Length: 474
Image (cartoon, rainbow, N blue to C red; front, top):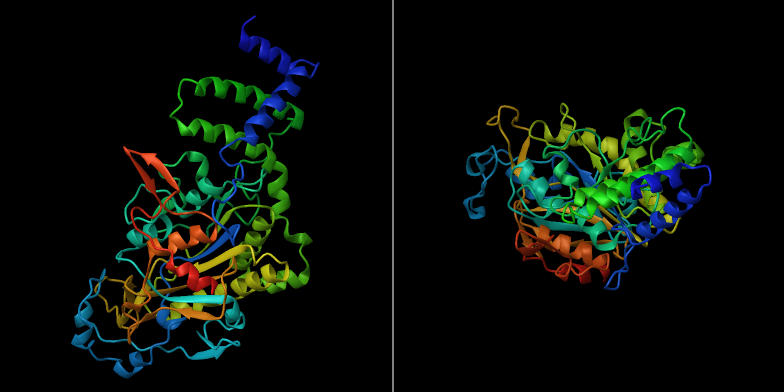
């Protein structure tokens, strides 16, 4: 009898001996698997990340970076002293300044200024570190989305979530390490949460909030748990033998891990997605009782449940490529932002409050932002879809904020110029942001590398400073 025949006989015999042996081998393989939790090499103040991504590019000028000069200059051309920048559609020096309709107010003990778009988030400003001086040079959506999510403007690089799970693994053995919850399509496609050249096991897993959380997860009708376990044990053995002669094929490791994880998720995922056990107060906190806020609020509540269960990196997206359903305010920017903020304000605030009340905010880093900001000038109609009340893309100065995970809130870091065009004080490049995120997680961005095409690559390429961390923690 061949080795494979003997193994199949033992595995499927009524004696159970093969099944016990395979369970032991599988447990040993999983314990040392690529997603096993790793101890951070630096002092870490955060264990998990929830990245709230505002797809399309929210205007800092309507949200967290008030510029009175815009209303003073409304309808006029930008003064020559501001120079020139390259934009995607509009011509900067030929487009009139566009004032803002929003009102801003100081909130909290810190007196941090927030616009009237976020009345609920404004109640939590003392938890927020608002960074008004973000910048990069990607003025198209694809390049900018790649910058923020992959640390590089072109395709092919691993995403931030993939790098973090590669560096730290996962504290959950029954859920994916890196989970993405989308509202719809992304302008740059799935590369925003892809593994790039990292082994395939580190890619993001898309989780749905309605119906079955993960497609094709349910066990086939008529198949018992024991039968499925035996089939998977046999399949693992064949895959391991197949892998012995294909050491460089990471998809095999990913496939083996995926089968095992899927088996465990058949129990864990339905329980995760069952929000009926959440109290009425919690559901109301996230806005689940309002049709307008329910979708994003549900994803935020799921994000809390995921980090509770040890998932390392969760990304919650607001905005879809379908119709005018993202933050890309080329046309009627103010109207666009009233709609999008109305969908998300409640869920974001609910997440911050819920994490804090459960003691999870101390170890969970929450990040809010999009791929860029918007221009201080009118978009006009040059792209065929904009209008005089819209704003073009602005990667030269924009805002994100962070909370939790060792970040001391109630502060504003950096500044843009008088019209919000460029970051001019304490500028933070995307490389610096990523280096700082990794450091908060206990990872030295210069040491987290992966060999590819003859050299060691890292998320921050050959750049990245961590000066921001001291400001965030002070």
